[in-house]
Image 1 (tube, rainbow, N blue to C red):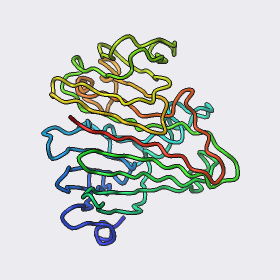
Image 2: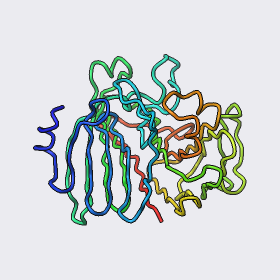
Image 3: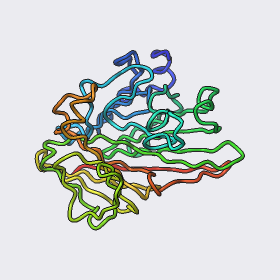
Amino acid sequence: MNIDQLNTDYGIPGNLTFATGKGGFPMIHIDNGKAKALISVYSGQVLSFQPATETTDLMFLSEKAYYAEGKAIKGGIPICWPWFGPDPEGLNRPSHGFVRNRLWNVLETATTADGATKVILGLKDTEETRGIWPQTFELAIAITVSTTLTVELITRNLGNKSFPLTQAFHTYFQVGDINRVEVLGLENTQYLDKVDGGVEKTQLGAVAIANEVDRIYLNVTNELVINDPALNRRIRIKSSGSKSTVVWNPWVTICANMADLDDTDYQRFLCVETTNAATDIVEVPPDGEFRLEVIYSIE
């Protein structure tokens, strides 16, 4: 992708610019007075979001993250699609699908009536993707940067048969001290405990993190809140198109074994993921579409 051409076609003077970032990937820099954001065109991924009223980024982004073709970028909002987790068919295809390590296309940029900045990136099936997943599709991600951050993933089935879909916004939230963080809104909710072999359990009280956590919460449609006393903030998560939520933190051992994380990074992030996962499987009909959306706000 030619950066000069991207700026000519899609740049917004004083608001949105394209630049070559780490790994040679095209990056979108937004600073519209309401917030600053960084979006990687590779992976279609928000890497940074900071409202003008805040002193700390909403997102965690690993200093050891890979910026290389075929690798996922550790941090921000990776897109898991068209499956979440391991290959559902056991064919040794990549975990979390194949769009988080693809270069997306820039489809549209705009300033909205209320001064927000909107970016739409897209992907279509190719001979390569059909070799991995034999479906014809259009996928678009619409990112709206304002005092809040809105991310919408739109899946269109261009084939003549329906296909199943699991997916996620695998969001890494920056936190001040993982030991003091609570997730509110999941009280009395059933979840699958993947650390304990997928056993179904019931959440008692707020979610606190004191060891490795990898859970799929079921039948979740309400707003969630991350209470972060160390950073003196609350993050609100409002989702639509989702009936499941994943909470993940690798804790000490797994974090130390991940080459793209520092050994102590587990203390500085928590993933609370808007998902279609486990029993929350979407069936996208022929010529149909499905929309997954999340809105993040800080208070």
